Image 1: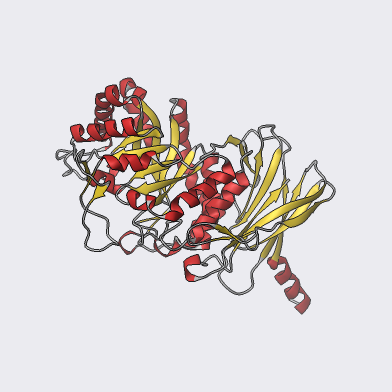
Image 2: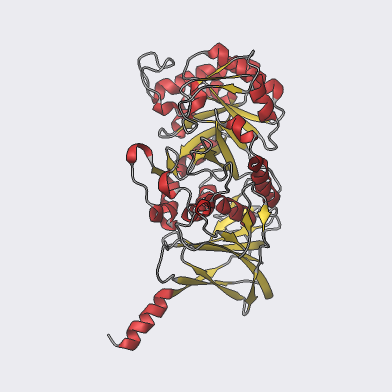
Length: 473
């Protein structure tokens, strides 16, 4: 190979070019987007602590300001099945732990827990204990939630019952998917006369939610308002290794979410709502991949792909304060993944009604269009999920064709020094070149846009590896 050929090959690698046609009305594959598509789950025992953090309301408000609707909140997780309601408890929650980094093995909570939940601006789903098999105590808690919370959306009974042991009190020595479905049905129908048809069913990590819909019976099905599927692409439990390039891979994300498409269809055909109601990058707190900029790009792509297969909301889980690698904010930091949540809400916007994928899902380059209620494209998105850590940073040029507008448009970039960049380590993750967030989640710096010219019904943008760009039409 000649020296010229080597240089030419290197230049082509550094600047790949993709051509993408933009339909001028939503294609048949486009989906309607829930205003609270990006939502938040908070671990049960930690919830009162989150309400005391100044960053919580500000971070949620930032997301709401972009979409015009508050993120929905789900309060639950492993510790909901360790919690006992005490109507005489004067504080929201009571427990002891060896160190602040630990989650309690048992806890009690009182009426003020629901008072705090009632003060959340978005709709709230509350997870209550089924594993202890104390239906009277759980019903008492549910009645207090209903009477206190004007923003109550749904009630879960049990968290990830597919992980219950046969020795769990509710199991009585034997446990299976069919036993759980029967048990959920009995609890729902027993409590519905007091609480209403307000239950969020399944709450499964491993079992199929479709099986519950098909098997629970008509009486119990009437009491179900929504179905919860839990989803973690990777595991950080027990020393398991995690892989950031795999997490953020566009083609990998496309394949991963397809496993939930049939479930979503079954749930919707039954007239119920389908939520990925607890999710994040990796189980057991997230491991080393979760606080990175690559996880921010994963959030952007994962949210949109999940919407395309029928998930109406994704509730990103937030765990133990101060010991939570995948959390979006903490006591003194706003972490890299939060930038992805903000950026995808910016793309969807207040006027985003329908979402369409423009690429075929087989490469590292994700392209999307969002359409207004008038069925015209209002924004385009490119996510370059090629992994970059150091060395020469490749760039991909994407040419969007078929545009009917002309003149100069504006674009906004989400970037960082590398996919591994962490704001809590001082890295400069930015939106619009200079936009960041303070430790209290207050927006800082001006988010600048870049001029992009439409010529011959087309425009071209360049996006570096591990970077994303919105084009405002």
